[in-house]
Image 1 (spheres, rainbow, N blue to C red):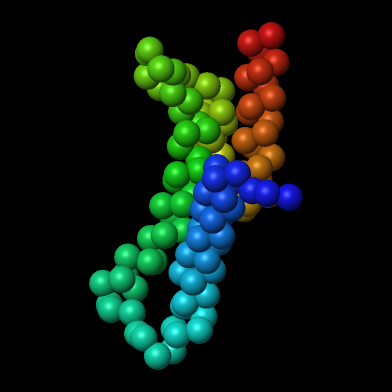
Image 2: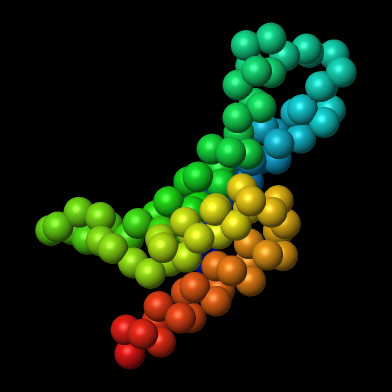
Amino acid sequence: MTLWPSEIYVYSAILLLTLCSVLTRAGFMLFGDYIPLPDGVRRALRYAPAAALTAILVPDLLPWKADTGPAFDYRLVAAMVGIIVFLRSRSAVLVIVAGMITLWGLRWLAG
């Protein structure tokens, strides 16, 4: 079996990206005790979970239309109801129940 130059390129790219991913992720586990992080980096890493959650939720709650910008969606109203329920009760189960009931109710009303 002979490999074409384009196949060699693809396989080498996959191999190099795998190597980069393993080195960057395993580096903290292997050398984390020997190379301390600066205080500024430690402070910035505290915001990583909130930033990741925002990056996942905002595009889902505010879908973007190419010609008009953000579009209204029922999920945004259900998310606001969920936030209000969370601020009042601090219960994750009630947030899920209230948000889903709101979403289903709005979809049912819209027909």
